[in-house]
Image (tube, rainbow, N blue to C red; front, side, top):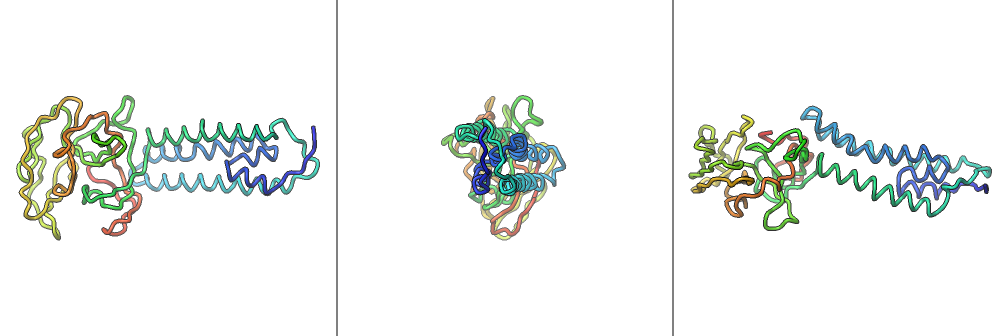
Length: 300
């Protein structure tokens, strides 16, 4: 085998491109693979812990996962740089010290490991969404970045969809767009709206008297879980007049800001299969409503 001193700048560059690749360049294959796998599994691992831990810890554990992955990335880069400097002229080039081997590992690592784990996390564990409108005030404010629990509404998931859930779904008139609204009716439910009162199967979900806050009429409603949440109407609003039975395999959704929401009153019921997650917690917010970090979403 030939001998070659390692270039510390190359080692650093390799690790910047992919954690662990700099270690492979330095001949520390096991360390490189270990660092790469720890980096790759940190986000889905912490995301799983977040969803299965106490409610308040969701945003904290996801943040820790991001910081942990960043720490592994920095460690990989600094270690590769320092180790390359320490390696002298006597370094024995191995069969893996070839350009095509580095390219193969890079391709495999990104397309068959990292991309698959990212897709799995976003599809089955947790995903971050942004609120672009005021249609879900006051539960979700315009500018909120919120976490969505994706472990719902499919065989083997931990919970089914419930009335009162704030759900994300594929917009039926444009399947490239994700909407967020509150689920009011499930398959077979009879929905009646008269003014600001909403009835499900003949039972009103409106709780007590309404109140006025700033420029809104505030009405409290009750979810299937027993928790209550607030919805907004304009002070002079006549509400809505509606009566329908939700078809099989469909759900009926409403925005919490009832006079400023585009929902099932406009585009109709939507397939239950298009529900892809349940809003859980605001991570942080750029909303005018002020600082919102770790706010738990109502009615979960």
